[in-house]
Image (cartoon, rainbow, N blue to C red):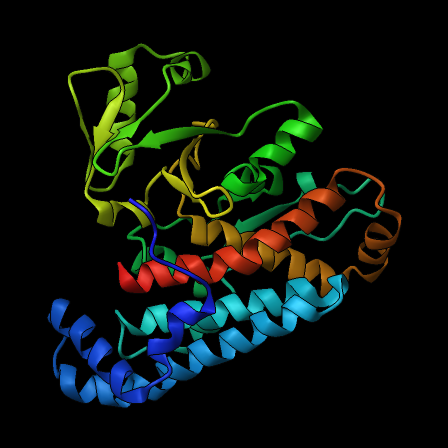
Length: 313
């Protein structure tokens, strides 16, 4: 179950309006959208330009100083997400309500502020609730809050850093033989579950379910389930699949949304919290700094990867 993605070169086929038109037409036909031919012609350049602009933001972020990196990466990801939206909603954006960010960050407390404990709140309108529903079929999350530590714990590439700095693992690696995934039995101790209870729990967390073999904790699944509302995360650094060890609210939260929320908050901090952000990047006072830097390194590669998976899935 290797993942067929190299880097931006994988997007090369999309830098042809002719190919984009055919691609969008196929997407619209699959969803039984009216007038797929006409709508794919109308949208092929917008789709191509969203991808192109997104790529430019990422390329600029790669060589930019840390203090502006989150802003470039956030807007790069937003452009790529809008390309994904056009594959399922040819009329996007129908109203100005969908153009807001769809999340808000709280006013910073100047004393003892820690990024780990900061939170974002989900709004009723805007890009975040729109993509949650349209791309991932999630119910309305309005009013819910999530803290940055919870989000960072959902990124498999940060597992080693959590272990080094906090002495705890945030993911458990799975083995695979291209047909099945094998979950280590130690997961039962982590989750305080019997084997049967764990099987029930995991099956309920996949949109299309999974099938466990009779022998141990091996399961197979539809590969299209890999990148939607799935607890299974792919670590692009060591090319392995893993499950989060925190089984609470966000166990099967789509990773694309995790990157969106972290980048949103970091981009707001970089824009409006100049003093705190400058001190963090110069003084490196606590664990916020290594986690933020590591996340930005990861999302530089992982954001486009997750978008590509969505488009090709």
